[in-house]
Figure 1 (tube, one colour):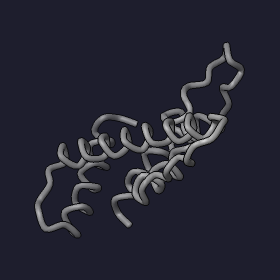
Figure 2 (cartoon, rainbow, N blue to C red):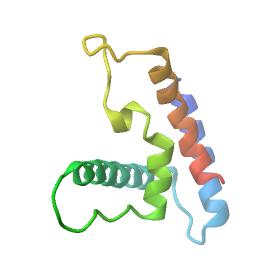
Figure 3 (cartoon, rainbow, N blue to C red):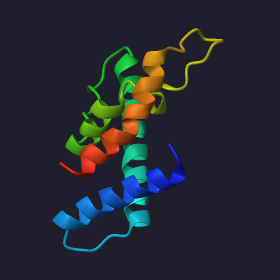
Length: 113
């Protein structure tokens, strides 16, 4: 995918955001917001997995917020959440590559519901 195509998709996403929002957002603001949402979801996903694997007493880990859960559901099987799998680890498959490519489309669907 070329940078021109990526920029066009982000402009379409920004248009969708601006269509439902009160404040006009630039394409860069939308990209930054998505980056922050994705980062927060990734941290929540990692923290939840880490806490869930612990043994012993204490309260159960709290569930991520609704928006974070939606992002986790969309990306939980992509390399951005699970890490890159390569030939050395034996985890490289065509499915992993396809999921990574589909993740860009998922961003658009998230904002243009």
